[in-house]
Length: 128
Image: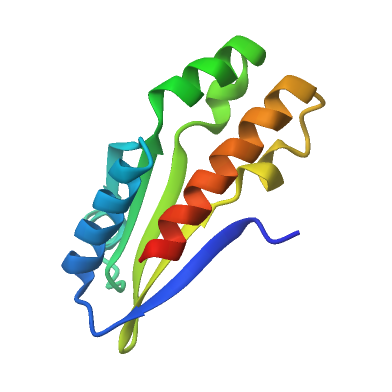
């Protein structure tokens, strides 16, 4: 099973892609709680040059609450990560597939929640 949904965006700058992803997440009820600039971090910590690459930690509060009520340790898998990375002439966006990460957890209540989140994150990728 593939653990992510992805789309390649052409004729869009890296920063424009970040804006589009953030807006699409918002339309599906997600906010971006964290933003990790991998390129800047690798330069600062290791003095390594790396392509533009950001990890957006997205959270839909109502689904996070439902998941936490169904499984108290699920916080180790939150928030839902979405990456935006420069790939030569295009920008690639990928979102975690929560169904893939939930396979290790045997909880039927959580499975339904993960299916709903999967649908929302797939919609985010599809509208880009």
